[in-house]
Image (cartoon, rainbow, N blue to C red; front, side, top):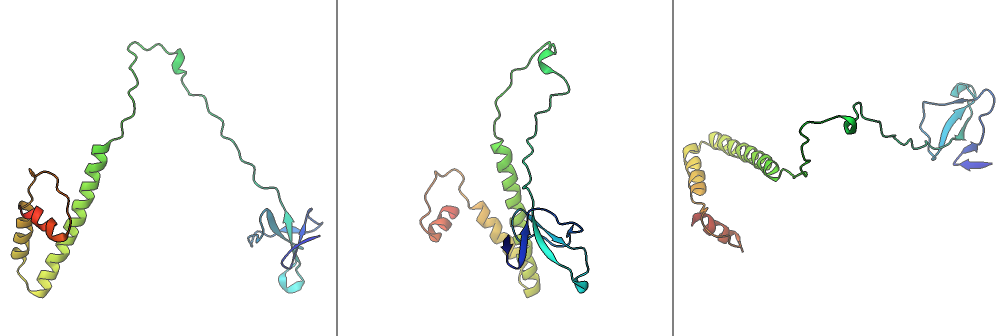
Length: 153
């Protein structure tokens, strides 16, 4: 007879024993079984071997309408799927703008708490954004100072 820790592993369910659904099994492909008594009145426990769940293959269902038998006056050519790069990029930009606005709102709250000039902070941000040269060719940024020089040119 096999054992797992203190429990016997049984092949068949003994008479008057029941599956204990209140406890998970510690061993694979087994379930706890008890003799049906209360733990205070001499309950015995064991493990019962069970078959692993079978993989149920999903059969392909036939379509409700048989498309091949339908007569289509103007059949359209199927266009290949094109990944929506622009849409994905637009979504990423919107999320970035949202995060940027949250950061700016937080900084404005700090300005208010500390008694600093909010207008000065906003003007610094405007100056930073207006200083970005969009017509310049791509440059490799070597350091943080190079980044700020690219922005200010």
